[in-house]
Length: 444
Image (cartoon, rainbow, N blue to C red; front, side, top):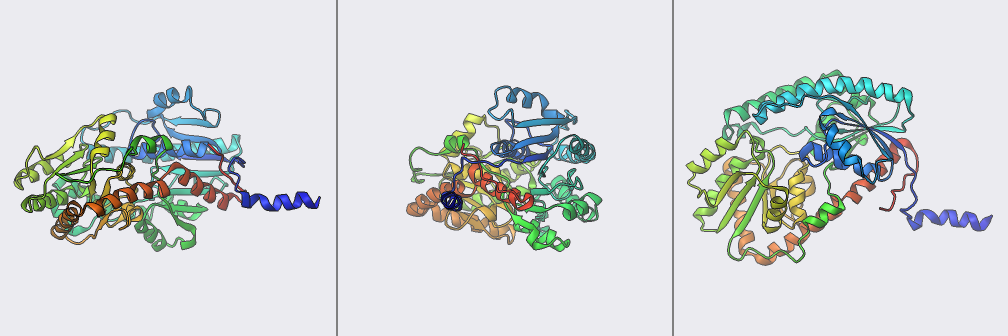
C-alpha cells in the first residue's frame, strides 16, 4: 500500500499528457466556419482545439451549416463535436462597413435565440461548464449567462478606443463608424446582457490590457480577469508557414506586407505617409496590402496624392490561400500600426513565416510583440508615427544582423505563445480553475 501511495505522489511531477480528464463544454460561437478568416477562424480553431481534450457542443450560426457538416464527415473529433444551428441572414451588403452594422443587428437576434437554445440544451444534457468564444467582444454579453454552470467568457476584446486625433486621416464613412462605435460603447455599459455576463461569468478572458482596464472600471474584480489571446495557429498551419531555411535579409530591397479587411482603424494611411518618407530617403521597398475593404478608394487617392509608385505600393490585392502563404514567406516585414486591434491573426501568421512585425503599441499586438522580436510604434500623432515607422524600417534595412535576429525571434515568439498546444494548456488551466477538476490535456 505504501508503494502505491508513493507512486501516486510522483504522478504530477511526471507530467503525463496522455492522461485526460475531459469535461463537457457548451460553447457559443456564432462565427465558426471552416476555411474562413477573422472571427470565423477564431471560432473554428477554438472548438477544434477544445475538442482534442473535451466533449464539446457548439451553438453556432446556420449560415455555415453546409460547410461544417461537410468538414465533419471525416473529422478526427467528430465523435466529440456536436453542433446546433440558429439560422442567420446569408446575404450581406456589398459595402463591408454597412455589412458590419448589419451583422451586429443580426448578432443581437442570434444572442436572444441562442440563450433560449442554451437553456433547453442544459435541461436535456449535463454540461460541466459553458464557454463564450465568438463574437469575441464584451459589448454584447453572451447567451450563456445564468445557466447555473460555470461560465468562461472570452477571450474578448473591444476595450480599445480609436484616438480622436486620428479621425481626420479616415474617410468620412470610417470616421463616422468610429464615432458611432464610441457611442455604442456608452450604451453597452448599461446593457442588461453585458451586466449579466460580467456578473455571472466565473472567469473573463481578455485579449488586451485596454479591455481589462475597461472591465475593471465597470466594477469587475481584477482577479476575475485574465489576459489571453484567442488567436493561435494549428501545428499544420505553423509547419506550412515556417521557412525551411533562415529568411534572407533584405540586401536589395525590403518586401513589406500587411493584410486583412481594409478598415480605417488599421492605420494604413499612416503606413502610406511612412512609405513616402522612405521614398525620399531612397530606401528601396515594395509594399503589398492583401485584402480589400471600405477604405480602399480613400487610400488609393492618398497614395496618388503622395506620389507613391503604383508598381511599388499595391493596396487591395486579392490573394489565393497559396499566394498568401508564399507572400508571407517572401516578405521581410509585417507592417500594420493598427490603432484598434484585438488579437491580430494575420500578424501571427506573418511572424510564423519569420516576418519582423512593425506594429502599433496598443491592443493585442502590444501584448504579443516585444522589442526582442519586432518593433512597437508608440501611438502619438499621425505624422510622428509615420516618421517612427520610416526610421525603424530604415534601421532594419541597414542592419542585416539585427533583421536576422528579429526574424528568428518572431517565429520563436509565435511558437511559444500562439501555438495550438499553448492555447490548449492555457484553456485547460482556466477550465480547471472554474470547474475544480484536474484537467490534463491529451497527447495529440
